[in-house]
Image (tube, rainbow, N blue to C red):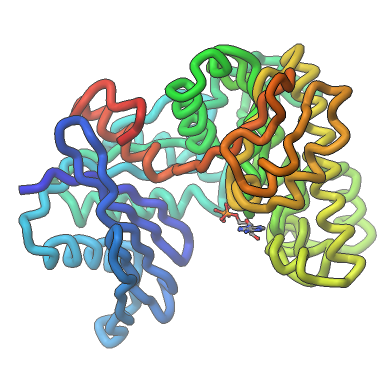
Length: 402
Ligand code: ADP
């Protein structure tokens, strides 16, 4: 029997899953899959490591495909693989651990109830993450379940880093700068600790630049600040989210435009950012390929806000030893990266343009006061590692997270 860890990232209409073998303290990814169209025309797709993508449409005649049916299909697929799959742990991505959880936690009824109480903090994600937990408990009743939070890595912030300038009562009831993308930051920092231990002990900014985007300031391994706040709207502009916005704009939309909370939510989460500014796409590749001035403006705005926030977080850190770029844009978008990093010599970043163009691991010049690295993030592997560690399947499992 192969001991497996399954990771689950459940959203409103899709579930992403990943399967790892755990043997001799090593995590090996066996497969990556996705169920799309939950609640509608659902489709199952899976790709085994090194293999072809396969899939099928769900049979709708048995009723609508919900999270339970979707995860039962994952179990069926695992069993159909033949060699006696033994799921020893299920790790869930849960967006919000509220003010409480600074580490992953094993799920039971009491923890689940606590996590449900955080639904108002992340109404677009938390309820679906938890639906995934309920479904996984039904599909894998023998396997312990672990929640891994996007907020946990930031939970040791000081009061000053976490509060808004509102009366204290709001902070006390949970209106705080939680910060997100924590699993990505943890993963990157673990890799850094393994590969660049001296830099990892210093002042680091990690730029997670994907469809969602944020920066995290890390001092001696601890998150001390993030550009994201109470929700994942704050900070940098993103694929479809606005990033930092004067709250007066929201008041204006309500009072002068008579927009409802639902309409403003839609505008700020789904129709702003690169997509809203360009009117073309949320995808950097499409914007780079376009001649439209609005596409250029959207990219220039993105670059400008990333630079501004690197400056702000560096000032808070009191210097910058290392900048890591990750996420789809950070790992691949050569031109965006160049624009973020050029003319920063005064600041301590001496970029090696050729290394940048070749997507090398280190893209700063030798001797640059700030070392700039490109590292690939892997939130699924972080969840699998947390799950293995929390269940004491193998401690410590990292580095190198394999
Ligand atoms: P998500 O947050 O959904 O996981 P990703 O981390 O995959 O998103 O990042 C998606 C973004 O990365 C998109 O804007 C996409 O255009 C950009 N991207 C991916 N590959 C490239 C590339 N080769 N050049 C420029 N941009 C890229």
